[in-house]
Image: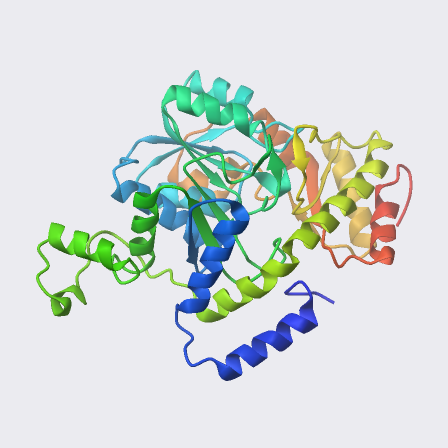
Length: 390
């Protein structure tokens, strides 16, 4: 059985009761409460809720452009092993995407691969993806970005709860994005968030989310922006649009589910880490697999079970094993994103990315959920033993 939520029955029951009693479903107090709770959980000053993680990425890039922090045609670095909505906004908003290779042992950009890219690119910003609960040496990357004047932002949609260098992933750059899609660390069905400590960016994100309006700003912020643009009355302000934006608003259902699911998040993260470490014990005894480095990570909030094989032939063998056992598997995110059709269409520039290419050709992942039963775990074990069969 596939689950949409942690504590599925209780969540469905609570949601149905909320729907029956709610007098409003458009964005309102439940969304605002979730934003406040998530800010407290993540340890950042501002959280802005969106209708999806992809929308959060799009709104973040648009907001940075609106503020003049990103300028059209500037080179923006991104993790070569990533998801489409990390890169598409860069094309859509007139920026120049430049891939940064990922380490096979961490699945992520490292300070070493970033330095290699900086030898032949002039990056204004780095939109890094923290992949599958793992991270690179984010502390060193953040230091390097500060020294080089590179704006660092994080796509943390897959690494909610991971802790590196005594800081949560998502707290190393100016802002970070999160996804609450089904099967993520917590689910609101669809939904996403941007977190930041920067008040100007938070204000712009709220306007970008809602067509460029000021409706969701504080009264003081509304007065300031209306005076700046010579908007003379409340009547005129109702349909005044101050900057480029979209309609990316969530619903009160999204907010309610976020508030309800947060109570299970810490236990979920603990179970995911415990599951992964059990799988890792088997994988470390099997020379068909490459071990992943997470010694620099204090809490490993794994999104999935990544399987990195020594070569492509072994990958195909293990894919057959997992399929034979009825275990759903996926490519390693979108693989080397440069090999995706949309990137070829809109870039036309190729880069040497040996790490991302290896992961594209030789790895895959399967789900890691807190609801995995002992039988589920034993089935996965059987697929991971060297020479074993499921």
